[in-house]
Length: 267
Image (cartoon, rainbow, N blue to C red; front, side):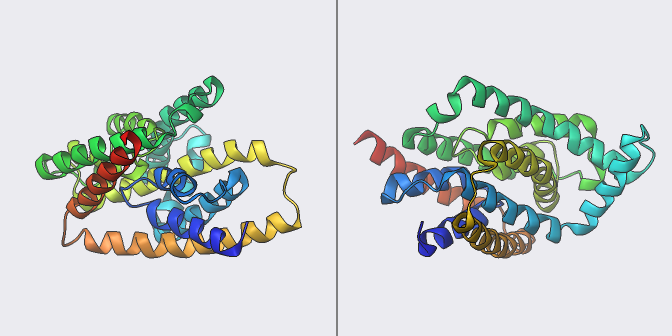
């Protein structure tokens, strides 16, 4: 794979991973619409690693709190804010792991990668995001996250395994429906992405262990670095914009892209 292709994949993954416009949908569309070779699972793992490092760095205070809390949680103690945050993240991750395993072992994960499906999910979940953002109450902050809310957001997150849905988009939608502010909805969504990306990366890694050679290691390094930089920039920009604007620009983008994809798919 050429350096240009690697940079293109890394930029797409990095920019779209945390924006509510579906990174998986864009990566599937790349070879479908351009004729480029599919990037393969090794590159997927590398791109996910880069975005994982970006979100950990950006939300390091919360991540550090959850890490220390995890140690207490493993000892059966939920007596600190960090331990409770770690428990909420665990609860929120279980549904997507179970649904992901179901899709993988039934073969449905390949059957739902079509352009038409991505087009419909772009539109449907874009409209849902707009409705939730415009009508959802604003009465909760991230510090008031509950186990019940974590489970509900986790169930919604599992739906994001359908390409075009957007993991960040659907979890932000769920959080807004539950009454979290725009910035705190995004914050919780990003924190939920950490164990989810680790889980999906580990699952993909099982299929590529032992297949990487010297050339692959070079490709991995390029993709990790570029996806990290792109993800950090996109995440920083989105969190700043949310203080002044709503999610409507992302909804407009989703509706436009979804319409184009449906036109391509059905004509």
